[in-house]
Length: 394
Image (cartoon, rainbow, N blue to C red; front, side, top):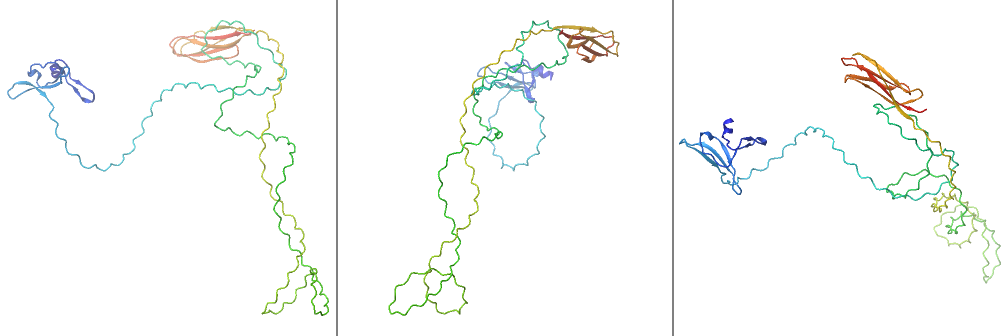
């Protein structure tokens, strides 16, 4: 490799990506000799001049020379391959790739525009007279800022709930929703409306069914035979139909039909049939239109302003510290520190020396004392200092 590199007058061999070998670059070919035997170089041409590739070798007459590699003419295109083979069977599914890393969180979208203000609602009824004390007076001056605490103090008691502020103006009505909300509960039954005016008479109902046929009247008595006359008198009026006679004995069947008798008179009207059963109740009519909204009541008078409260006092914040005696290596120690009499703590913490010192406890033992405990794992005596941040609330 060193001999090849030494033959590279103006360049070096370089192993490029994917195993390609970069040849040394020259601008002028040196005289061929045993020194360059087996060397391949590239001669770079200038503008509009092609590059050349040279190889140094010895011929059979023991003369050294440079041979230029020139590309030969392109041969004819070979025949097309045979027909396409059948499609191979589908290979087994590869194992699932490893989970990709989580993408970066995209930027927060712009805030949506403010909805249109809803219509102003009706004025509410006047509230009862206020029993709440008026607003708190101005705050006192800011006290000196205490030292930064490394431990969060206990949460103070929740202050009293402030009085309810006045009702804000009704916002503009929002845009119509495209989603129907859930159906609200059914409202209470409204009061009975006044009796409506008499409706127009309905059409006459269909004629009821014909009543059952009344019983046949009794057969009338046979009239006396009149004197023989040679001239027929006028026919008298038809008498009333007599009651139905009893059924005679069935005579022998006649082979000759007798003459048709005269049509009897119309019988009397039958008795009125019994009333039919009541039909089913008709469907409920449509609900009437909503009544108009009543006018809003008059606004009530504003209540009297309560008296101004006393000016609040701002507590004084201060810090107390206490340092323990020496704690020997491999031992544990505790140090506590308290607020002044009558004051309350608002925070606390601990400090110690050495990276191998471990704080095991740091907490308020009362509302006016902070306690620290440590374990000394160093090779020398160590101390622990307890801090308490207090408020003078007297």
